[in-house]
Image (tube, rainbow, N blue to C red; front, side, top):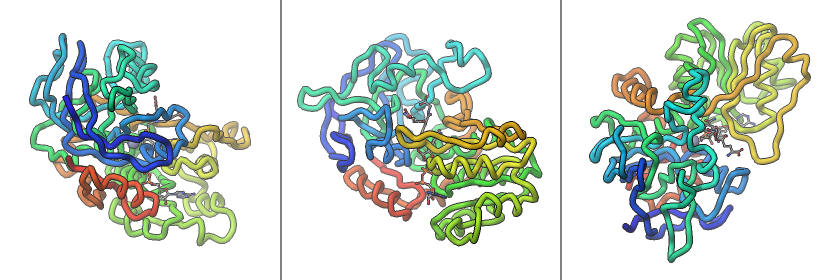
Length: 369
Ligand code: NAD
Ligand code: AHE
Ligand code: ZN
């Protein structure tokens, strides 16, 4: 079949809207009509050539929602007509990682996913006979895409696609990092570095669990008003602080935060986030994705004296199990999504979504097909 898609032919070049050839689903795969997709900073990072796994030409996009239109042989967990969210972190429920109960990082198809192909080692997308690669196992910047059945979460049918797509990455990543990874408790003090599409969801997660001080840190002054809408109690702009930002935050929290979250991808900020944790027990969660080649550092003494550095992918969520629950949280009003979707674009306008993100003018742009 044919599908309209925004293709990343080369790094650092705008996406091109073209008609691709798409092969149907093979055994264990499903064809999904993508109804809406968000644009996450990770898409921009890969397009900018900063991802060590970035492959071109490819169809980017990993924050979608849509409808199953066809199923391959042997598919049992979803049916034609089901509403689904594609999962860049699948959940096979059979691999060592899934069975461990200790992680959401299913390993069933991670190797081929990172190479831009389906589990059988081939791509379903092509353009004028040339292979086009998949991205993060999702490729939601295409009107139709093919996914393994373990990489779709079936969701309720009354959830609007143009909002629920954000649960495919940003909402789950931010709220999940608080609930699943950090396990923040009522009364804890929290600092969130970077108040964009992910950080605002960390804020609302912290508010949801009853955190006490919820401090937002961002170099964009416009983010203060955004943070306040989602439970932030204090805002710190590092550009307006005299002296050391870590010292300032440690004083503001009476000795350091119980939990900090990096949502910037900047390795200098990651260090600040660790060092702003409370001596003896503070935990810093790295969510931001750093450029290829970047490394984090701190004095080992920071860890010796009880601070803990950890990371979170997809908010520690087990996709097929947890994503439908997060959709319920949204539909029941426990979490907000609508105000964070600042721009709704057509596929033809998708490059504008990247420009708005880089200019700090959007929280989330959503492309509706
Ligand atoms: P975004 O562009 O919407 O937001 C980034 C925010 O960080 C902006 O508000 C920006 O002003 C702020 N910022 C930048 N530099 C800063 C600095 N030095 N100090 C303080 N604030 C600073 O991006 P996003 O979509 O929210 O994504 C945030 C990060 O999370 C990216 O690195 C993205 O790749 C990553 N991410 C990780 C996961 C995961 O599963 N671990 C999932 C989604 C996104
Ligand atoms: N490919 C990069 C790392 C990118 C990365 O860390 N991705 C996050 C999700 S970002 C979503 O917006 C993730 O889930 N990582 C776990 C995984 O298995 O990819 C690199 O550095 O090579
Ligand atoms: Zn993302």
